[in-house]
Image 1 (cartoon, rainbow, N blue to C red):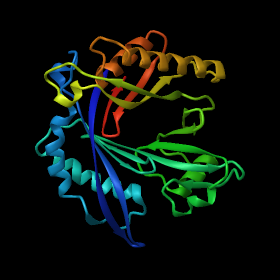
Image 2 (image 1 turned 180 degrees about the horizontal axis):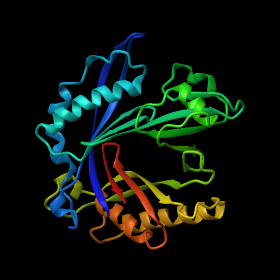
Image 3 (image 1 turned 60 degrees about the vertical axis):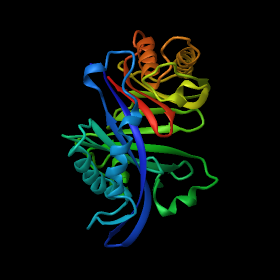
Image 4 (image 1 turned 90 degrees about the horizontal axis):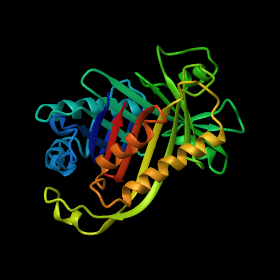
Length: 307
């Protein structure tokens, strides 16, 4: 079953205190929602419609200090603050989920019945036992060194000690996925627990394109010729659990890029974010088992399709 959400993004500046003192950070908040009755139509309602409600909600949290008790780091504070924002929003808007994100790419997804935390780690390839949390103050030690970026997805926050135990296969949460990303080629491989073959293959493409939308239901400025830097991220299920070859990655990457370009260059009504994402999904699903598609039109607007 396909579920498509469209997101609106805003940000807040917060401080949080725990037993180690007071720290501060910028957090980015995504409100994710779907229009159940019109999900199959050509157009989903404009993401800007939620902007005023979102501003009113986040004003209550922006430029405030929060006590997170015995919790340890930024991700813990994101969970605490995110729960409060979610409760505030759901008191007057029916959202599917909210996503809280820090500048390092750590994310907390909050839904009515679950939480999913993605935490980023950096791995020093010169020392196989040396990890940094991306938001760790010591990450400058990796400047100038080759490293990979690891993302661990789990129902709860993973500490650096737990990360060491997972890598050493001495401790495993009930379930987790761990991805390693080669930033140069924008390819990420995701493994489920200790499996040796990747379960999910993710490729990110970037396209710079001009477009315009001729539809009266959208704001006037979108009807003028303008442009965006589109970022498209596609994850496919490696159901055969086979070794991922360079030829496979190149072929999949080219397919994604070509479908993205075709959609952006089309004279039809494929030009809005949600319709471009659906077009790419329908074009790829004949040959690949799609897990997730994300498409950014601007830093503040994206659409996401779950399969």
